[in-house]
Length: 308
Image (cartoon, rainbow, N blue to C red; front, top):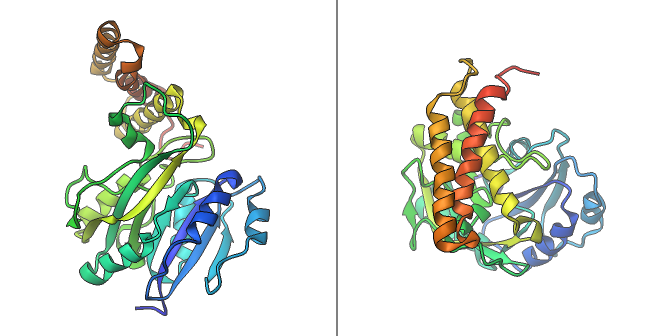
């Protein structure tokens, strides 16, 4: 073990309004037995975040560092966190989350018991506004809610990744699999994701041990801006677009014909649900339309690797 066992890393971009509560709530966590540090990556913040961090009163005994990363993008910020981290393990959280008081200690128990190379923890949605009637339980996963297992268990399947709001890695694994793909992940208001799934799958392919613990709980606070149907549609449009760009590679820009059949079936499904159950039940099907439109757009007009 290095002199510092754990680096808790928080990457932020222009979210001073969220950070105030995040830092207040984080001060309530129980500290682990091993040494740790708190690392904030200021990812090109142009709001009051730098001032907030400079005047914040940190709990007694905390080792805190704030590092600026001007290259915009969550993947760039996470890669900077890995480079700067002094801990053997880097544990990530987001700037709009409230950690359960036992959160960090729960990860420490997992690390001591299983010696994982990477790990993930449970995320619960915490609404800060009234939950709209169209927001069904099946959509909560798109807001970050996740619980892969009710007990500590290995993660072994490509479709059972941890989520970016609550996970950790042994820093040294990046020597083998590299960092986060800068083409993926949020960049300012661009809602593209998928960087943690890509990273997780590379860990699996390299044979690293990945574990899940439901005991390390993070509460993802949901703001009014995300309680809009357009948020879910934009999320899926960008996902489809990015997947198509990566699949197409250097091939023809003419989208495969079956994309249009999928799009037509998605429109039909929306109409069927609308007439049987009303508008509040259609969003999940509308998200499929957005996804297929994104695939067509990405295939036809998306950049190629190396495009400026």
